[in-house]
Length: 303
Length: 226
Image (cartoon, each protein chain N blue to C red):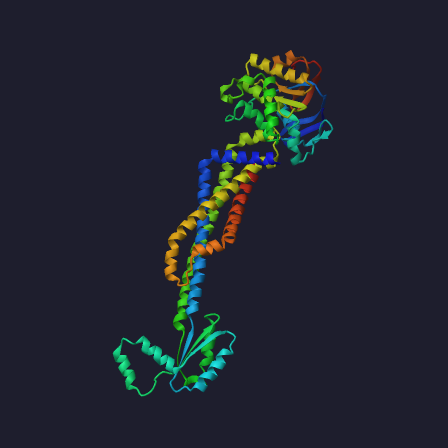
């Protein structure tokens, strides 16, 4: 068995050497396909991270009027907390709101003077509500838009965050579609190239294949080298594409570090998902190459 | 050794290669099958190595009925029948040694066994001193001797030689026939397909004549008659 395997390996390496140009092109196209898959994967990861980052910052702020009593605020707090969509409710008292306002506008004497003119705190308490999904905010705002609370609530803010999320989602959806198109295109080209590489290899070795048959080589011994070639193409393209990916991540990560405050890095992501990501890619490329070479062999190696 | 019963091979209604051919070749015989182009000689060869299947009839190699042979059994059949062709069918990028060892490599023979067997085979055909040459560096007769050495690699019980002297001059043709006779003396059955009158007449062995797909003559110690 080992003798068979070593001879099959020997013949497949010989074949790659003889058709070096075509083998090189095949690997190149497979690398391009894998890189486009990597790009798609990275876009998805960055999008998810971006949306999570925005979601983290998204909340609904309920600004109570100055006339709202602590009892009113506590009642609304209890009402809101009862919603299953609500994850967290933070309450700022009127005094806290006033002091943070003063801190924010500490440099502006006009504003501070104007505040001093007033004999009482013009701010009411503020309630900051966080929900599981941004879409849940509509429900919360609707629940608070009832006549009983009309005089107690001065303002509710959320709309800007919602449109930010929608924009991110729209941009990434389009980017994903574009990259997915590239993946399909490269997969199609790879299929045709591998198919033609094997077909051309078989066709240039028709005499050799004929002699192999003549001297009693089994079908698997004849087909084996071509299947091994597919495997070798898959391994080489995966190794080169992964090396290029990691190289490009060294340039991308510093930019991501600026955009994402939580030390997010694609390199870390790929490192922690290395088996999953590259396993899926290897299996996909292997299926593609084995299918195309199998089809080429079926057409060319009929007895 | 070889038993053919009522073999017919029809490619299409206008192309019938063999018609109801029956014959028996004993182990150790040296048989010439003669006939003009299109007489069915090549089809007969293809049927023997299961490259084609007969439309009708039965073929047996020893006790093995190969009429409906399964695809995965064909390699084992071909290791029992050594083939020699007019155009030698050598691999131009391989040396003499590699061309012969190739037959053993594809059959999964171990390397040390190959290194042991190849010098013996090259010795039989008188090419020991040319084992490093490429086919293009050899004469036609020498190339055919390489093909003979390769056909012997699996120690076959039968050798089918399809026009082995077709591309050779008289002297080289004679040398090839002498090697085949020597192999036959060791007990290997030789089936020689030829239209070389001199060769057949000089052999004075059994001659089977095919004409238009029919077996028209089967003579012991026969001559080339067409």
